[in-house]
Length: 413
Image 1 (tube, rainbow, N blue to C red):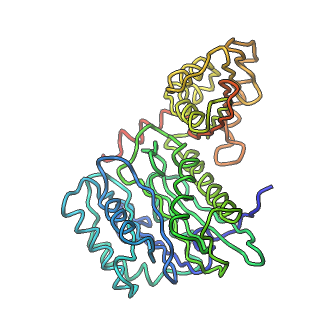
Image 2: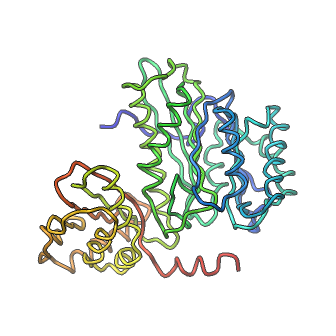
Image 3: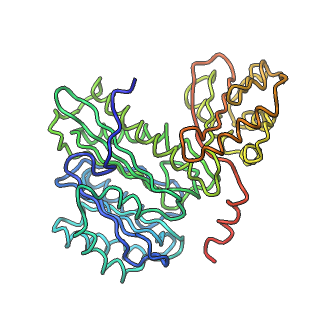
């Protein structure tokens, strides 16, 4: 049983945080498009970012800020324009955005981190942002988590947020998170955008290491379409407002906090995969028997990212050959005589040999998952074993539907 329980509030569930989300005219639709998360005091801050050579100005800005100082006070996020591949003017827009928010909050501009999402090659609509920041700050409240989660959405069908709490001694520690992402999801760091708040006290080096490991077990294990974004950003704050003793060394308390952080990240990562553009179901691939965890994760992500596997799941076709082929090209050595593949409760292959199974029932299993979209019953589970090693890894994705092509064929038109 988990040592934490789910609570309401998202990123404002932990002590000492306010958030807001407003419509500032950045999106043509008039939907909310500007979000703020602010800590009452300095928070230890860690970030993980895209590894793409084509990066948004906000990514480079945050990297510079966190390299100079591992603390921050606020995150400003705009939706509608990615501000990626926008040259020197895009960089100046990012700097101005931070300065405008700093003036309104009456804090130093180097304590502000930035994120953007939207169309690549488009600068932030600065007139709207300039006019919107005072309204955004005025709207910030301890109940603003849901509004902030809505304001960072683009093609997402649903906002995504979660919060947990647990006990450290006689005091409660809370952690909340929100994210956005639906397309251009094949992270090599984190995800499109994800923000986590915590009220524990933890040293900066531990917090960064925890976040990196949590990202590897969550956001780095999802894929929707094989495309890594220019704007991938994962930022986590820990402001110490719980008044618990500071966690400064590895040990039981550090492990407990990291486990909760990983659980938050995995919940959000699965929410993104579940909401993949055009998706009808969540796909979870579990791989066991590999030489180590990294090898198992690599096989799992290769399978869940296969366009052929994803297309078969959309067609409710239990074509295990596509799963076997994807496992075989993952770049991880194993003996094919050890390969075992299971779809839900249906054993399709064992000892590298095909087995008879009820194809109609296996197809119906996938149909039932699609019928349960956005519910806990919406998952197609693929279990693969490749040997006797101790390595176990999981990856998440979604099926590939006709609607994915339609959404992305018309994205800017």
